Length: 223
Image (cartoon, rainbow, N blue to C red; front, side, top):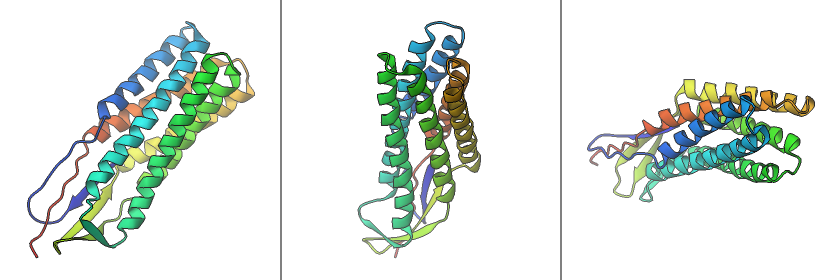
């Protein structure tokens, strides 16, 4: 998700926080899932992958929070609609944060041997649901709104998330949720869960690549 604030004047840019960490977590999840598919410590690696993806979602939530805080300057008040957009973006942050914490907890429990065959697929369903809700929220937050700074200057704030990235999140989310449900139905089949983890890790990597290229621009117009 990228946030742009535009008007007229000089520009300031800021890079999102921790984008490399999120991408590294996505790569780690893919590698661990592939190793597990080769039959090496399947249960343990699946549990560790669950924890890694949970961490990646938490990092994604902090990335979005850092970017949004740069877009919403304390000195600016909205002429209309900014509060609503902030609520939508805040909802996406909470979704990823809650899913990340849930994934970490389920991953730790499964790693110590507590109902691994149930908890890991359940975590995959949670991750899929998070991607679906996050993609839908990002797709909806696309209309520009006007804000007035304390100096009286008018600023147009436009929240832009690439439609392709949002669509990818939704598709991967549905696929992951379905694979998680099938994994609960067909007990003992790790293939479905691991394929789902590879899909989620790939989505996180692509979103991270898009996110790291996002900038926050503020052009002010003289009153």
